[in-house]
Image 1 (tube, each protein chain N blue to C red):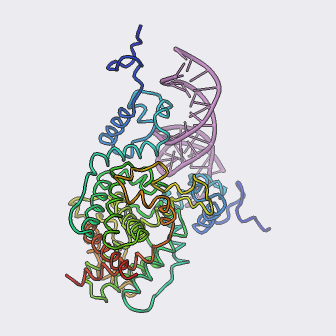
Image 2 (image 1 turned 90 degrees about the vertical axis):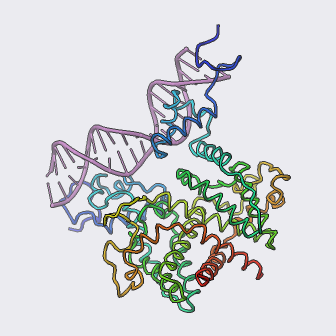
Image 3 (image 1 turned 60 degrees about the vertical axis):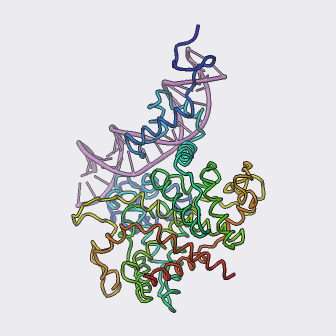
Length: 228
Length: 228
DNA sequence: ACCTGAACACCGTTCAAGT
DNA sequence: ACCTGAACACCGTTCAAGT
């Protein structure tokens, strides 16, 4: 007599909660309640299972997040940019950035120890693309790794700062733009340029210059590598 | 009659717990137990006061951390670098980096919304130095702000990744160096350069190239600004 | 005015026990 | 074998009340 547990299973084993089911439920929570609400306990509740049961399928919270991100990169990070090595590096880094920036909760694991090592192949292919292009341009393998790492730091920093910045779309009130130095008057004699910038700062800081500065960074790094 | 510095219990009422006392106690916890243990509750216990009392002196946990960081930058961040604008930018960014990197717990607030706006004058002077030097070099005010912000992203990313990386000093075991792509064999036909790099990656990734890549970034950004 | 215990509303993780 | 309730050891923050 088969136990009436969860139907829609194949013949044989009673269908245990699967990895895929977990990831779908996790995405549902993120979409419905915001990613801050994605906790181990809530996820178990969403699946209708005990919190403990989740630990049979996921090592810990970090593991859950990494699995979620890997699934996401597998779906969004497909590229093989053409062109000069320099342009391939920029294109790969922009693709990496855009894929990660779309999921602000990625910020939580981006800087964890050994993060890159836990990435799946689609993400690693971006690393490969950058390292390969740098070597083709004339970098030594060591220089290529250092170049990738520098771009990675810049990218992670951009994503993390942006993820934590409240975007006040169209809010023109004086309370908007907390990221200005100037709501409390600053000493114009000590900090003349910041004082002169005044309330232009929030506007300038809101502009997206990631890709442009990335280009400058890549050019600077490639030029430096060529000098040695 | 001389009283102990921190009265335990209900002895009269010497001056209420001061901001300075709180910050000293916070630093004591960080030094003794590690910064992960610095919680509102523990800090109150360390001071011998009720958790609630702390909220009379500190708006919330984030405010506590920002106050702590501001005190730290006031003590460590004094500079007025000489030389060419380009070198002044590099020197200021390195000083900012070193000051923040010394306190890994800063990672917790570095990316919070409006963080820069909550900094004290010593920290703002670094921003002023970088913006002023960029303008002196020929940047427009907008370009100078963008330049600062790009360096900020790079710096924050470096600090955050490093702060979360376990440094296995002298650990030569195979388990060491989690940040390698290669403990699980990678597909050499799909990722040839990463495969060729092999176990060299952890060693290369451990090298500190912050200042060198920063120089390249600054050169790249200044060159790009001059082109427009 | 200054301070606080208790409560609220949560966390991630473990483990002995149940089915 | 698979699953789980209950417990452990915490969090940040609030509020009504005490001194």
